[in-house]
Image 1 (tube, rainbow, N blue to C red):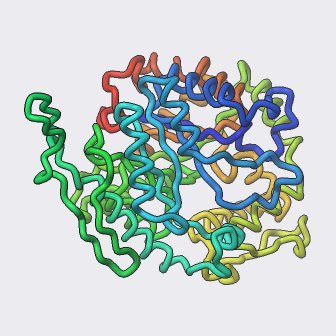
Image 2: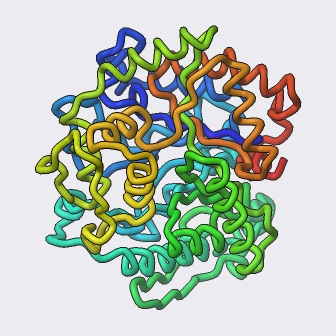
Length: 426
C-alpha cells in the first residue's frame, strides 16, 4: 500500500486552527513543517505532499488558508529527512517550463532523488489577476497548455545523458558536451532551446503526480503520471475509476500498474468509536458557514451559492458552471448532494470537514479495515492522507493506524529504497 500525506497548514478541516489540538502560531515556522515531515517519515510514507494556491483564499477571514511556496519549504525539508519523497505542486497555467524543470531538478539533486512534481492547471480567476491576466482559459485550453508544458519539462530533464559528467581531473574535462543536448522545442505554447543548467536527476525522470478526474485530466494522468490523487467516497465508483485509469494507461502504451491510484481520506481516529465520533463532532463545530460557502464558490469557478436557501435541497448546477471551472470536483460535489438528498448547508458541512475527500471516523482497527477493503478490492493502490488537524491528526494516524497496516503486511516497516521512484516501485 502506497501512502502520501497531504500537509496543509494546521489541517484541511475548515477553521480547525481554533482547535486546541493545533498550533497556528507556528504554522509558518520550519519547526512546524519539520515535525510533520518527520512524523510521515517515521510512518514510512512514500511521500510528503504540499499543494499550492496562487491566490488568497476567499475564506481567509475565518480560515487559516494562507499558503507557503511548496518548493521553498520542500527544499528546507530535504535537509532534515533522508528517505521520504518530497512532492510539490506547480501550476502549468502560470509558470514556464524551464523554471519548473530547473526548480524540481534542483530539489531532486539536493534530496538525493526524492523529489516529485504535482502537475496542475489553475482555474481560479483571482489567481489569473495576480499574474496579469483579466480572464481564464477554458478547461480544454488549460489542459492543452498543460500537456505541452509537461512534455517540455520532461524533455529538459532528459537533456543530459546519465554519464555526461566526466569529472576527469587529469585531463581537466568536467562534462562531455556531446552528451548534453539542446531540446530545441517549438510548439503551440512554448519555444524552449535548452538544455538545463544541471545534470540528469538521480531518478532519471522525476515522478509526476496529477489529480484531474475529468476525461481530459484522466487522459493526461494515464500518459504521464506516476500517481493520481482522486476524490472518491464509494467503493464501486472508486473501483470503476481505478480500472479506467489502468485501461487508459495501457492505451497510452504503459503497464496497467504504472499509475498508482491514491484516493484521499481524512482519518479521525479514536480509541473507541464514540471517542472518534466526538472528535469528529468537535472538529466539525469549528466550521463556519462563511468559509464553506466561500470554498464551494471557488470550487465552482466563482459560482455564488449564497443566494440559495441553505436548508433547501442542493440544486442541480451541472449546466450552470462557468466554462473555466474545474470539472471533476464540482461534478463530484453536485452528484454527492443529489444522490444523498443533501441541502446546501449539509453539503457545505460535509465538504468543510475534509475539503471534499472521504472522512474515515473510527478506531485504528476500523480505519485500517476500510483501507484494506478498498486496497484489496482494487479500488486503490494506496491513499493520500489529509489529516483534519495538524500535527495531532497525523501523529495519531502514524501512532495508531500505521502499526495495524504494518502488522497486516499492507505497509512497509522500513524503506528498502532511497528515492521516490523506488518507493513507488515496491
